[in-house]
Amino acid sequence: VQLVESGGGSVQPGTPLTLSCVAFGFPFENYYMSWVRQQPGVQDPEWIAAIWNDGRHTIYANSVKGRFTIYRDNPKNTLYLQMNNLTSEDTANYYCARGRAPPYSLRGQGTQVTVSA
Image (cartoon, rainbow, N blue to C red; front, side):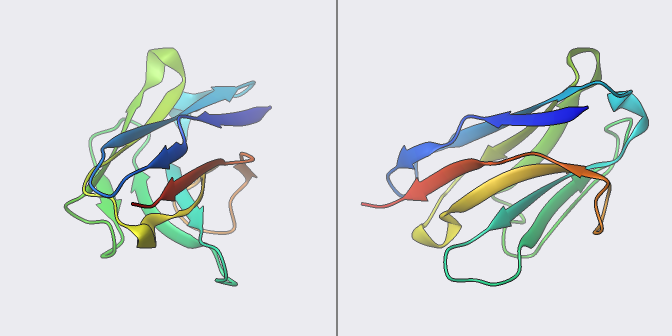
């Protein structure tokens, strides 16, 4: 049972980026899923988005609302995070988590996103 993220990298401000999270070993379609990020120098991780198990409903933190989009492909057991208008403040390790809010029952290792000019 695991979650594996990919798609991070070093990008310039404003460059779009899409992260992926593949789920293994559990019925992905039965679970709410979230994206969470850990910013450098910040003690607590920041929840940024969640999606209902059927993908019909999504919610976002104010810090990313209107710029990021969470979506999922249940037949592919994959969760996505499309990120637009990135700024240096979006630099973080991004990970997916099983659940809508902490404590999460499962989380991935994360993928690093670095935004710099």
